[in-house]
Length: 577
Ligand code: FES
Image (tube, rainbow, N blue to C red; front, side, top):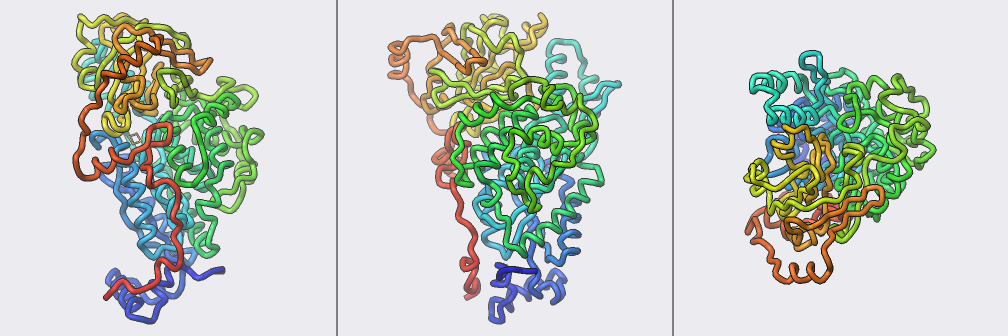
């Protein structure tokens, strides 16, 4: 039963010029009068694109959502959003996440939608959808596209990204031919879906499930599995119920308790460092005061449970067969805000109470974790006054406490020009410092943080070294990599002042990152430091540079934080002269 006046009635329920026009024009698509009889309109925001391979199957998913919405008495209408293809888009999809969030928010606001189903998959498409929906605040439910099936090459299981980096390092060390590399690349990506390790896409799918914005079990269902479409159908049905009830809205779900739950889940699954930035951005939209300190607080008290690459052994398909995220959440229940609501109208606890673990080597019980603390740590110190992030679960344990001399690269081009220079004075004890790769510096904060280990060290068997930058890194990457240094070097943060030979100390257990250079010397360096000219003088790039926040604030635009809920009265009045 509909409990309130549907927003869409302000378009289709009017017997005036505007009502005549909106119904008449939509009838060009072949809809009968039945569709305008007062049933809720369900928008299906689709980030399908052939340029976003991870989302290229979402048209089929949209059809399943439509089937569900129609069967529940809704009127589904699919619309495209811009799409952010991680692998093809230059310089980085992160430059455009906020643009996509604006697109989503404004489409929800401008069209006659009573609820929305948001279809996402690749890394940035999920947070962008969530940010837009949080600001517009109409009832919303997310369906992610699901991970690819596991890769398999010569009896070896391959994980997207994680094994790409490993095989590429083998190629650089001369242990793999071009032909073998080409063969492996076909075997690695053999189905639709997003990266199938616990990279950023799988992490963000887990985050939206832990936040309560998807139906339970959504995150891990493989993209080609028929149960993905069944889940989408149910989401379409549920969206109709939410539209009729007028909620729950994102503002009722995205509370401080929900973010705590998501952060606990992030730590337990050994999720991507990128989730820190995205959760900060979503919290900013939802009006929840979230800081990096909260991530560290919860990390220290959340056991690491999920044995998935890049931090562990298995792949997303194994996670699904073991029971998926509901099992992780069930294990975490004693640490969660169990009563937090979710889009299906039930609490997190109610959703996961009957979950069963079918493989406790993939999902460890709370009492027998892989590690007693979470996978991510937040660092502070004079090199990162506003914080930095390290994925300890994917780092080399012996490097987590390390003191070494800096080898500085002034930007990404400098890194690529000199990293394999035989004259470069670098060894496994050095600390590789990369500047100008943050939100404004690169621009867009690309995933350049896991800088390559020099080939001559790789040939000697060195696989990891401490690397520090203001960039991000792919959720599929691994290594002792300090990321998101804030403030970034491009705005004159202390990272900008590091010089070759400076001593740097990383102490992850104590959560510190220290540049062992005196304050007086740093002040002298700061006095002569000059910012580089901006990358853009016009267009969206200019907007980005003028308004992007630093990593510790989620890299949203300053003026986009908060929400402007869509109101019934906003849609009043004719749109025709
Ligand atoms: Fe899309 Fe990895 S490239 S999720």
